[in-house]
Amino acid sequence: MTHTEDEVAGLLLAAGGGRRLGGRPKALLLHRGRPLVEHAAGVLRAAGCARVHVVLGAAADAVRDRAELAGCVLVDNPAWAQGMGSSLRAGLESLAGTGARAALVFLVDQPGIGPEAVARVRAAYRDETSLASATYGGTRGHPVLFGAAHWAGVAATATGDRGARAYLHARASAITLVECGDVAEPYDIDTADDLGRLE
Image (cartoon, rainbow, N blue to C red; front, side, top):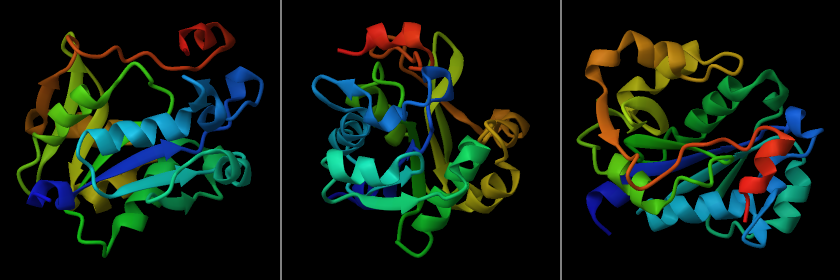
């Protein structure tokens, strides 16, 4: 295992309740015959993350029952209904003391982003002050890499569904931008119309 595999942990945010999908938790939507959460955790592993923490919220028990997440650390976020920010905080807290020096944050509802794009962002890790983001045609998206030096600041500003947006906006000049538009599509599975993008 190279040092970066050990130091960069995958952090999968998979707690959403799928409000615009009629309350169908995104983690359990099927993609290629398996729950999306299982697919996304596999992408992080294939991209080189030896440690993967998965933040669960809506239907957490059902996700545990139905998804094959062996080897992942499952983190419960009882405050998941407050939005993505609460899941980001719960996930970063779960990484404290693990030896991880950076978190590679990935969203469960972006199946168009595969291991190649995620590995590119992971490769931007230098040390615990690193900040990196995938871009698609120059527009910032996920995954995003936060060195451990940023975790407290991200947690302090992560509210509602904004996640780390405000923190990143304030530090735009420090972010290493990693273009991934040639290997991935950053669409979200948010509405019933988007379900057609699942395979």
